[in-house]
Length: 240
Image 1 (tube, rainbow, N blue to C red):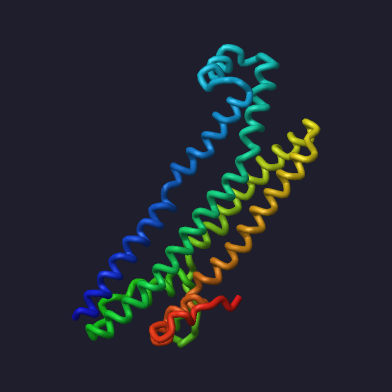
Image 2 (image 1 turned 90 degrees about the horizontal axis):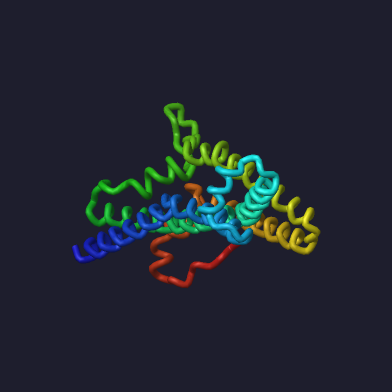
């Protein structure tokens, strides 16, 4: 029973760590505060406090000079918008990768505990999640293999990602045009390079993450080799 107790302790520790990463993803209010701070930073560059800004807007709504300053402030807020959004998305991807690795290891522990206790009590991480979230093939009544539709992934692919992409395209285009209009070609080139670098990195890591989160991925295959891992911990190496 000492082995079972040790496995349960590791099981609980990993579940606690996994919940921490899930909670980190849910804290979008912190990320929204980053975006709000861009407006304050833009006001600071214009030498205007937030209170003075709103006071002037309410009292001089038809003032051309004020409208031009508001336009510049909005564009200044657009400049860091897309880079910050892309960086925030990279934070979420880091947490997703951690969640998947931890969940896969929890699944291995579930199988070990079930074998030692001669039961099938634990099943979430090694049976349910690969099918529901990882696209692992299952057989229907006619013995045809098919994968369940991951509703969360479909919503992200068809709603969240396109919406964020359009907003980022809109804000970054206006920001880049603003830099050109102010005769800052070097800043424009640097801005575009940074955007393409961030987007390329996210596409690459997102592709890798999509491969790792499949039910029959290289990573899950490694974790399933318990004996090989126990006998030789150095066996893990990159095969990419």
